[in-house]
Amino acid sequence: MANFVQTLNRHIIEQERLHPKATGAFTALLTDIALAGKIISYHVNKAGLVDILGKSGGVNIYGEKQEKLDVFANRAMVRALVHGGQLCAMASEEADGIIPIPSDYPIGRYICCFDPLDGSSNIEANVSIGTIFSIFKRVTPDGKPGTDADILQPGRNQVAAGYVIYGSSTMMVYTTGSGVYGFTLDPSYGEFILSHENLKIPKKGKTYSINESYIDYWDEGVVNYVRWAKKAVPEDGRPLNSRYIGSLVADFHRNLLYGGIFLYPGDNKSPSRKQGKLRLMYEANPLAFVVEQAGGRASDGYRPIMDIKPTDVHQQVPLIIGSEEDVNIAEDFIQGKRKE
Image (cartoon, rainbow, N blue to C red; front, side):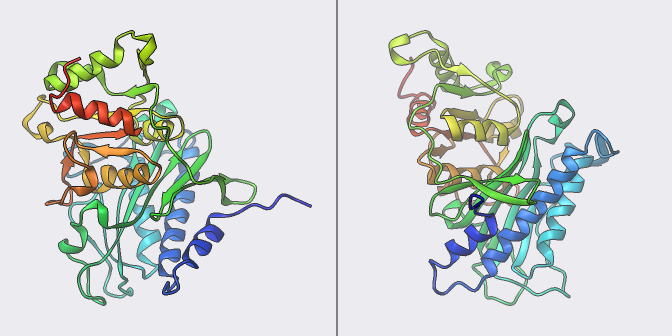
């Protein structure tokens, strides 16, 4: 008899059964996200064979040149989510402002914020990239289009979050606040299959991930932390190994499995970067929810990421995320409590 496999859909349904008042809308929404992930995965794996590599000719709201895959992935996410009737609005890193639900579609109770293709500039180097998503319940009355009030909620209000990573295999990792689960896409089934149950990040890791080319732009606390991490103190487990891929999902996923810390602090390269570069709603919040559910921490250096009340849908923040003890140490340096 073949070994029993648990699909993503079955797992979501079983989780929803734990909530007697569940309507099935939440299950349908996560299923739609998984469908978008399958579509994006298929095209990412064909990226070297078809004309979807390179620049699209457009720019996103940050003035960054959009990759063709960014545009495709954004369209795939919107199309997969808009038809289901579970959302009252969406927000994407690749769009300016709220993405409304067309008037001829039903209006749902949820909000989805997403980065359709994080790290897509690395695709030509065959580096892992990913889709990051965050789900909230609306706070305005049902039956009407979503508003800024529905979008601009602190991360603590998330009801689900996760990511799909496209690498040597495609994997979807998500949480609904009851642990973290990973599902690997099996091409023979065409389904996401449970492969990592109740993921837990080690309390302390041996790896730090940061772009050290910005060292001359960092505040003193960040510089001191990196020097501490690199110093050889064998009895303390140092030096830490430097592992920086430059694709947030890939760096985060590795640290989630093996332990470690990822840092993207604010810097002084330009006034806009002082407050950080990563997006609160599309990158920091969802990964913070995942890492906290796995036993880790996420901070801007001074406060938990999920405690930040957003003021703008495209708000940017510093991000220090990973194993609990590693983040605690980094915070001490950033706050000036430690020098060495």
